[in-house]
Length: 273
Image 1 (cartoon, one colour):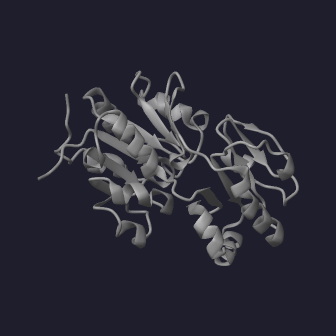
Image 2: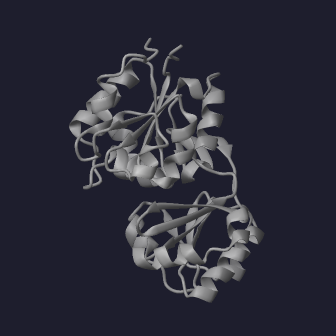
């Protein structure tokens, strides 16, 4: 039996966004049409909501029951009033292992809570602020001076070749402590061990009285795997790697060829109002 889709969740970079970091007119039109027909449209990103607000406004996701999955699932937030539906962080104590690894290997590290980014000043200088280019505070801080509260994630931002070599050095203890994902060629992310986008989506689906049978997702990268494997319909962009495509249910066009709209326009099982 084919389940009716009530929610569409979309990764941004490499998925909904073109290579120029824009939402195409065709993708915008397709998603706005679904939204007007009662289908929930949910952006799923590793960034904070302030960093993607222009996309939320462009798609008109400003109703009282519109939400965004941020920090790769660690925070589910209502768009307009910024009310928190679900939040799960990682302790400073747990981040000590990661800090020591970065120090030993001469790597940069940025630690994010749910309000700001903290470039760690006792380590190699980071390029994350320049890469993110977002409306969020950056507060350079020595690791020992970080407040003892929960953080959303930590990020290593540097040359792809350096991150390739770094990943090979990651210990089993680190894999046991963190959920480690390569969200972009120049970004390696460290979340709480059981955290990914599927966690945030489960909280949001439950809020509406639905489950993963009612979910369609679009993604292209490793940090999308959880939601691609959990959803009733998991659509992988053609620009995604072959191993990612194997984890979804369908493949669509590339992010530069309106791949999201291509699939939506031909899908029949939306639970429209």
